[in-house]
Amino acid sequence: MPRSITPVLVVLAAMVGGAAFGALTTSRLYWGYWLRVPSADWLVADLASTERFTVFACCDRPSESGRSALQTVAGVRMEGAGDVPVANLPAAMIRRGVPPTSDLAVPAPVLAAVREALDVAGVLVAGEPQYQYAKTIWGNVAIGRAKAGEELVLAAVWAGEVSNDHHPYYEAKFSRTDAGQLKLLDVRRYWWDFAGLEGFAHWLGGLAGAIAGLAGSVAFLVLRTAGRRRLRNTVDSPL
Image (cartoon, rainbow, N blue to C red; front, side, top):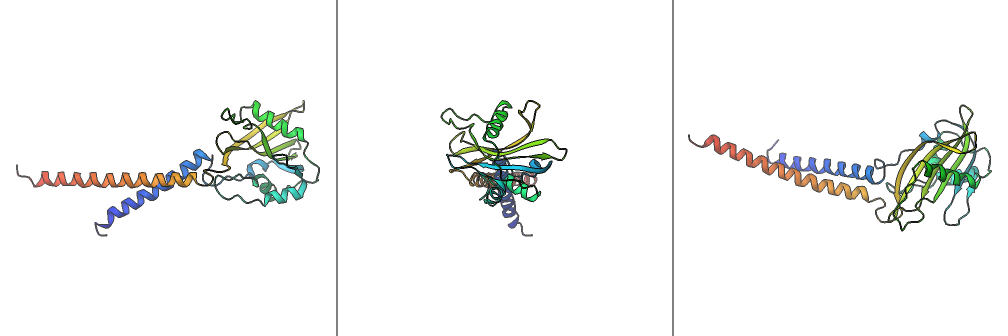
């Protein structure tokens, strides 16, 4: 391989590596996942059957329940990293073959109980003072039975913005206590943007990584060349 090509390959490799590192790291830090939101299969893994499913809509829009609501929401396409994963739980329920057995709605107090349980556990993000809906949640809630027979409540909900256009998304699994309250078993939190950096944050991170890779590789090559020249001059100079 000609020596003139080697520096070019070093620079290209550093830029590609820097771009990949920057994009992946930014996505993980900003969205909470590596470029693509993980499936909700973990949430329904213990679910043997589903009795009720409801989509609690925001902004005074009517809620929808039952198998048709599940099918509709499962078909909502996520446009990429940073978009709200509305279909994550419904799609997992369909894949696992646990659609609701009735069209009965999940009672509205269950959504309030989900919010309270998440808040008590310290999961809900308070957000900046001017965002009063940061702990208000909407989304998908299912009630079913685990393989061992106990009742499970599954929630995949999103909340109001906690900073400019930046919203949390929660996936949570609950059981019921003897007193009828929800007990949080497991939870995962991701993020999405309504506008602004929606779908672009990781690309900006990738661009920054590529620039860093370019600068670092050029600096390395310059220093290596200068070092070789000094070594050559030392060897060639008479004693």
